[in-house]
Every structure is written in C-alpha cells, then in structure tokens.
Length: 280
Image (cartoon, rainbow, N blue to C red):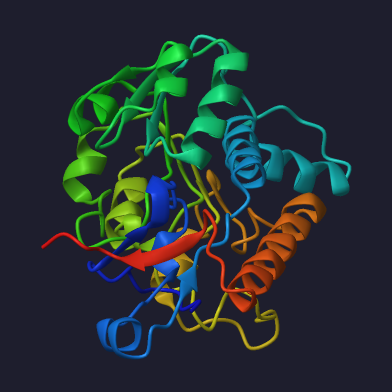
C-alpha cells in the first residue's frame, strides 16, 4: 500500500533485516489484514542515488545562489551582488539518518572533501569507512555547516527540526530536506529565516504538500500562507518532490515492483517482503 503521510505499522518489520528506512513510512500494513487473510506487503527501493544527488543539487544551488543568478542572467543582468557562496570543500556536513540514501549523500560529501558527522540509531559501517563521526543530534546541528535529512517520518521524527533545533544551528548553516516534509516544522523555519538566520534552505518536500505538489497551481495560486511566505525568501529553493524522478531510478522502481508481483504470484518472498514480527 502506498499512502503518503502515514507510518509503518509497529507490528511489521522488513524480512531478513533489509533496510527500508528510506521509504518505510509510505506503508500502512494492518494487523487484521496480515494476520487474518495473510496479505503480503513489500517495499520498493526509492532510488537512493537519485535522491542523494538531488539533495546535493539543492545544497549546491542554494549555496551558490544559482536560482537568483539564473533569473538575473535571463534579463541580461550579470552583476555579482548577492551571489557569493562558500566552498563545500572543508565544510562540516551533518547527515541525519545514514541508511541507503544517507550513505549515498555521505559518499558524495566525502568526494567534496568535507568533515562528516552522522546521527542515527545505529552507525552505518560504510559511513564509518568514509570517516564519519557519529554524534548526538544537538552536536551535529551545532557543528554542521550543511545539514541534510534522510530519516523516515515516524512519530519520533515528526518536527525533528523544530524551533529548538533551528536555534542550535549555525546562523549561516544550510538545511536540506529531500526525505519527508513532516520532519521540519515549517512555521518555525519561516520564523528562523525572518530573523536573518540560515544562509540556504533546499526542500524537495513540504509537510502540507498534499494537493499542491504534483499539480499546476500557477493560475489559481495556493492558499497555504506558510508555504507562500517560505518561498519569498531568496535563499530558499523548493522543488516538487522530484528527487527520485530520474530515468534510471523510475526504471528500477518499476522493475522491483514487477519482481515483487511475480514472486508473490509464484508463492515466493524476496528481500523486499514485509512480514509480521514473531516476537512479543
């Protein structure tokens, strides 16, 4: 089942320890269905490379003021005023959630020559090999020049970035969210930006995106005052939940979905299968 804005049922986990934290909050698996009529459910990998690359595209764009520069150049305005950015090389990059997508994001960060900080319930050995240091969330927020979110939306992570978290960040920090909109308290983010803090914000998701993202609202506009205000800040770039949307990634998603259906039809499970927990 593919229902956005929901969380996985606590009675279920991914078979054989497969990592589904990049998309597990899209699944609602009901006890009654699974236990009484033996419904099978499976996850589909949500394109970790594509999402990580898009997160970096957002980070680079807001850091180097590319939206402003592109808009100016279309009008033949080639001034440099307001376009100064910073070197990514040498930055401290905080990765919140180091599953498949977070790991891909960290690998790219490592290539830029950054210092890596991570926060997760369990260290990823591949990230440790990159030199990532796992720290407490508050330390990551306070030390990082660039923070990217890669955790699922669960009750424990709802508004993970709230007013208190934003207050801990550096005044010139860059915040990127390509995971789930509900991770960020958008009203608190707007207030932080109004105070002159944060040098860049890149968002591919928004907590109230339903009915807005994936639709053309260019004529009638939107009636979401928070989103409208957010998009007035020049250092903010919002994209339409498109991080996964590459030819390669969509093809992989289609192939995995077809394989799940084929395996289930044949009475087989695979590494994507979600099964009821047997422990109590």
